Image (tube, rainbow, N blue to C red):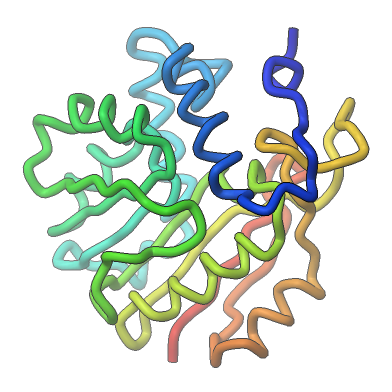
Length: 228
């Protein structure tokens, strides 16, 4: 049975999309957090090493603009698979996630990284995080599971608030339906995001659009924005 089949789509007209996401991702955390974070490499050293590899994928193209004294944030950190590696590179590292079960397990996962801090989020904003605090914000394999473009838009807009001037935001989005996906987005098969959506975000806030390119998986795209 596929991961999507285990958590079928709810009514897309449900008023509280964030409650739906929190309920289902918390259930995934309780069932097998590592499996739902990385279903191909979820045991032993494979899980940890995948975090190192993917941390490089996220920030590798930005390396010439990064410094060790930076403060960074990961949106949708899960149990913190990549955070210990970010903690080695940056002075201060934060992760935020919608699922209490992920955060609870994450605090154990990052216990040896004193400069890594986890936060339980509300599922559509960065409430509780200070204005202009971060040099770098990233999100990897998270927005692809969000069933509402409005929720992704809220995250993009609030990221503008928490970034310092010249701060960078790099995030992954789903650009087309996945094989076997049903007719409606759910908390596994999220909404598709295209160039028109990125251009709309550039109009809502004075972002500088740095890049928008297809990832190695052609169903996903990277977006890089910068705060002036």
